Image 1 (cartoon, rainbow, N blue to C red):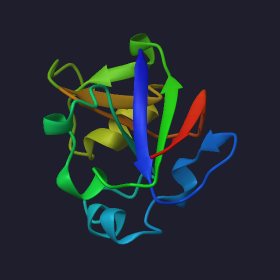
Image 2: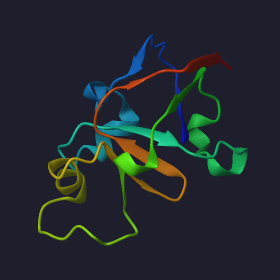
Image 3: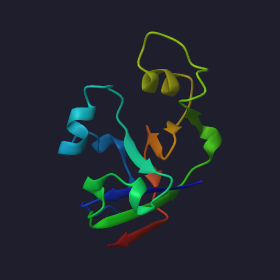
Image 4: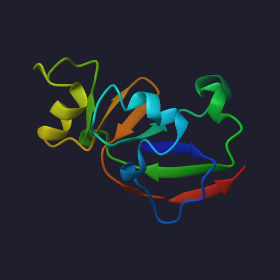
Length: 115
């Protein structure tokens, strides 16, 4: 499936989750889990994108198999650890729910568009 990442930073080659926490959007999310991650959309219809990203300078397009992602609505993973940790521990590359994909590793950029 195609996934879309918005940023004001110019990346080449990959979107890398190792940079998680470097901007003020992800700083507050760091409190949820210590797992480094990057966020993507599956639908970039204007009303599906958070307002803060609608004016981002760059749109990055990548692709990932849905089989590599844990469906947060499935309820298959159980435990006391955070869900990102559990999903990564059992081998998922990320998680998804509705319009959001969260990846734990870097992913190759297929296309970069300046907006």
